Length: 260
Ligand code: KIV
Image 1: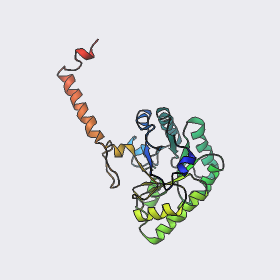
Image 2: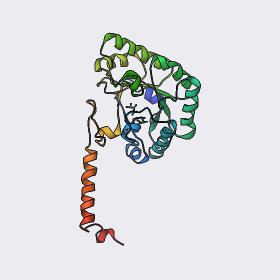
Image 3: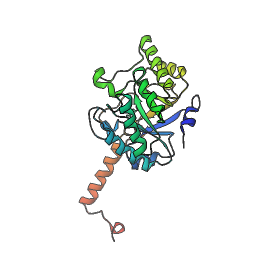
Image 4: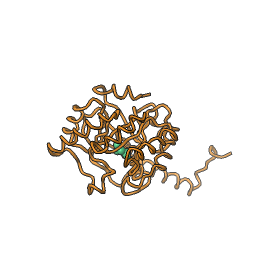
């Protein structure tokens, strides 16, 4: 199982693999396979059918993180801190402490660069491991007026590098780079010594993360360009369900072998 030290040492080594999970059942399927499992607040959209991640609460994240920790006992687990739960150092410390006291997660994740570095520092100085998150930040969707790919201009690339350095200096052990032009993500990764985990940011980060329901084809509302589907989960489930309905209706289920 990964530790903070082995994750940090993975910089420049074969890429780290990260997947999200929201429940014990799927977490148990991912356990001991990937390097890290992220209980992302994306669950508010893919699991809870909301328009964005903003209404995810601490209570919801703790519930799902507990479930994931029960299912994946041998994998490094990160709990996403939801919107509004780290608005200043003491609020962040209070809420992030709940992750350690009420679940077995190993770290928390916080969105934001330079403007959130003081929050990350307050947590890391109080023995809470933090994964940063810069670039396209879903918790900023309303204030930014949508989901926008970052790193398209030199000015923005320099801003992102500054963000990454601030997050590293504040003590984060790794950094998610989301929705950033590939060449910019490469430069950010080269500018810091903690591993970067990319999503929609090209191949040159130190690892990749995908939302499980996207990559396994269960989420059909929309498919971002950066998602590769490794399974057509929704189609498989619906085909199986059609079989079940047919079998029940024509009384071929339950057959003798399924009957006491
Ligand atoms: O909430 C989430 O799943 C995330 C990943 C997309 C990085 O933050």
